[in-house]
Image 1 (spheres, rainbow, N blue to C red):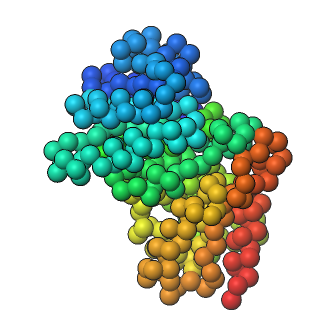
Image 2: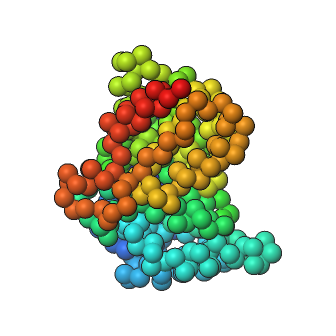
Image 3: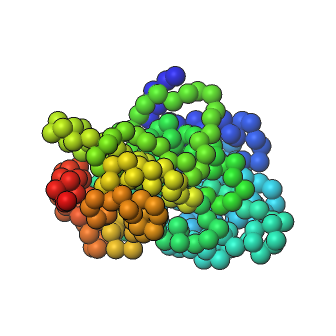
Length: 328
């Protein structure tokens, strides 16, 4: 076991896969000598060459369309889009091609591609480079959606995404790239998509959190533990497929649930999780209403204080848990 950052874990996974499987290659803007917008592919072109670490023109639709075509012919492309906001330009390729082709070809044509993209606020990248749009793609049948919160999860989930015969959208939070580090096995391993992880066990309230919000949930749990309040933190790791059973069983145990994501609360995927809970056997065990936390419905500000104010922070999770416990 060695301690790797989130970036290092992603790079190691791709490098190990490319050494083992000649069909795997990467394409995207500035991923070659420059090493990508956040350095994830740094040094890979020296090992694998420009044919397998392919710099592309600035055309997200072209990049994604090229990946879909190569996937249909038996390759396993990994697309890197510089910012998740730019997925908007590739939505026709994703929603009408990648997501539909396996169904339209009666299962005879697969699209085994991964689209990796950094998401989220906290870096002062402003309104066009800081959005969390995972609910958009989660709405489209045929696409899988993954949001790793740790370096260990990032490596194992990326391995699973590369091996999956379906297109996978792989969201990497920008704040986690260099701040999240932990023990990561050197040997390759895979974490199943659709299997949540209980990051912290508790008995009085459940927090279901995704991506960077997992870390804020764990911080909130520490604060509340000093008050004698036991918090369970569930990280779905993928929202499509979603591990409903782990969430339901946690709510049955704790009787209260907070759902937190950085995406705008209105229309966010937290609403889908809340609905799933109320439609399940967990509903009869709830002692307080399901509480959702998400960003304010405004463009992400450039000002760092405003940027922080519009997204849920640790103190917001602490307060939400206290309020839930005050409900009879």
